[in-house]
Image 1 (tube, one colour):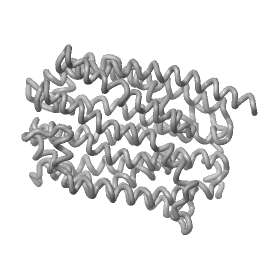
Image 2: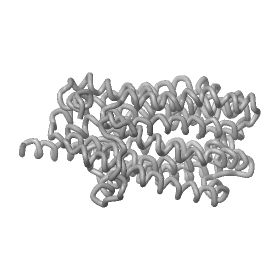
Image 3: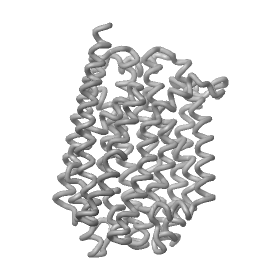
Image 4: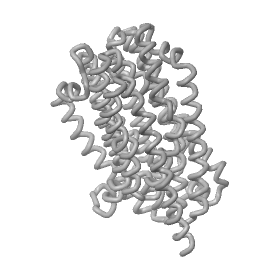
Length: 454
């Protein structure tokens, strides 16, 4: 290990936590927010250049895309957490085994789900709420985006490992490359080549491919902390199972998101038609931007928490958690206030249709009523993932995405129709945050017991 790489890891153990969290979180936040802003701009291009029906079609693809993300985080999140913990334990060889096993499984999972989508595309889109009006747009987007999903999985998975092994700024550059290319290429394909929603998908494929090549070049460089080499690709149970166990939590979140989106899209269509489906697409884009800030902070928190957990530095572990929770609560509060005060202005960014603007404004006001507390719950979930507590992370992931929101989605619309769908979100945020607080109290007691043993 050269001195530069040694210093990268040493700072996780000794650097001031505020400075360290800033160093790791800022690149993650900037990178992922840039990606999210691109997604919003992409939807603006589609909404303004193709029309409201195209936004509805794009909204239908969200749950299908979540399946791709689910497989990506199954490997990427588990691999990054294990890499941080193993490097904290000074087990570099095992960290490289994680790298090799992760690449093999990313290719296997990606090939499987892409083939399934290609074979059963229209039935899947129908299941997720596509109508006769929105299906052609959703079909065209998915048909052209499928090749790029493998690129996306490889980029996402190994970008996380890059950050976990001490390269947060380089991980940010990866996201800048993809987002920057997308912002340039999307209007060219949509407007200049007049390819509509197909053009948006092709532009995304190209951008994903370039980002993937950048990430792979990093891990083929033998001068970096961990890198690809012979002997690390044979699948080993002792390497693979911890990756899958830790990655199961975010994977379940995204898989559950597919189920939730299917329930939401079908419920929304039942009560409000294609216009309400388009409104949920705008809501998802806007709140997704805020959530990306939280995810970025959690991504910055993960290598610090994981390394110090492996090194048994429990004092640094907990201070990092509380700093992260405080920052994420502030971010979600700001996002909540913006959605409450300026919903019409936000909606006009996506469409000029007056009825869709009004519907989207109502959606934003009701659905984000308790959004300000959601950040704490997400940080707790990621904390459990970072320290390898797979079972608790899975449970926490399920609270907000499944255990609470599905009953509310089934019950509240019976009383308040379409407004009941939107109110299911704040009710779920409230219940899941209370659960997170109780789980964290229990975890803090456990950490204090471990600390006393040392």
